[in-house]
Image (tube, rainbow, N blue to C red; front, side):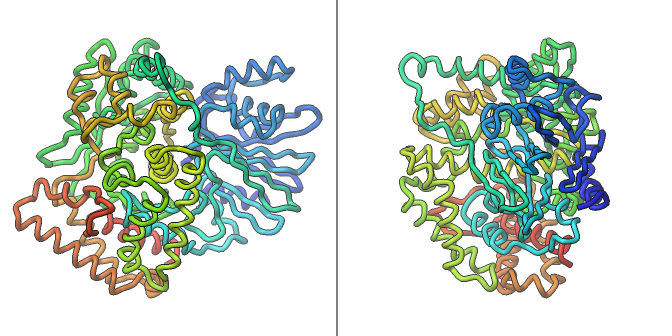
Length: 620
């Protein structure tokens, strides 16, 4: 690969790093970097070339290592000399000194590539939860990698074809759980893989990539006795330190604030830290829907801002969604995602990051990860309740009942094929944890960390980077997730909905209004309640079905799609007839129990709509 091809890859995703670009080329390898300057601005140019102990290394790095100063001191003690204060140089030196064990020492979010020039050996690694993306294509003695598939697809020797198993998984998961996605080692393009979270990859030109998982959920240690009694206090300290660490750097910081428990915790801490650093007020943006009778996120965001007051001031802005322009960002969002999408809520997320960028943020803190770590879905999601799943056989059985619903939409697909994909997912993300002796609640927690959270992190990365912003996730830093795994699931949940995340609520009851820490119940992101917001989805889907290219019907079953579209249209009409113009959207977006009969909702229609648009953007 030459300089022209490398430049084409960088051009394709230039929004991910508009502050600087750099390249490295030798006879065997080419590396390029787009820089979003946050730490040690002016001195973090990449690719970074350094010599250690007779070997020349070249690195490109995306993300932040929050404990890089501690690692830097360790490396200095081992004789390493540094020329910058940036975490990229620390990450490179750590790999040079400690090899593959370096990644397990990092606390943060990253995708790192290191090319050992003398040995012609490539090393790639991602953070434990996959906050930062990393895709690769391997063919013979050639390998290419990038933060997004679209960059790899600019190369002339990489064919652009849909990954049919990824598309089948998309519908298989979407008809059973809260969202549709493909497993975390696939992209939606044939031949382009995603390096799984918590893994590293070694490659040389005379061998296939070797992937090893370095991170495993810390399931063994459990709190007991006095430590369990002090859990709330210990957790409060861990989250506070993690949030402060996530505010590292020299760039302006904002917060995505929903007014729910998780984002309110992060906002309260960040507002105090900003005040202490003399950088008040803290920018916070909240999603709201125009002309909707109820906007609970807006109400609670205002409540928090007022409650924090002048001591920890917040500059609260609103990302406003309008009916007439509700789908205006649809194609742009799909372009950035490189995949179809299941949830209408992410249109609001996309707009929220735009608002944060327009108001000066470069780094955005979010509360993502708290629900998965502290059992925020316990009374809503399948597995814990709705229904209870206590074994691999239970899981297989209740999910298998949804396969006919997905199958009706798919052409040229047998039930056995979907069952095999289901079995792969269960084996990877449920059975593997069960085999380690985890109890059923812990198994389901790990399932949602590996699937649902992975999907949410993709959304946050693509929506933030579309506007050259870096999203950060204090709940996913090491001290917090390690503590979460030590808290028994039984200590996290109460007897009914609204009593999830008990330890987290108790930890911050003195830092938040009671209406938020005790009473607030909400979904991860607000969906529009007003029925008028769902009309454009119905109308756009009908238009896409009518003008779909012929090759789409090799993937989808035309009759099944039309049947679902008519059922969705009939549901909207029925809700209108019942006078639910202001609240009917709630019924159209609620989560389905796995043990109740399937019925069409807006996510199903939106999942189809984005599939059609993704197909046209890529293959028409």
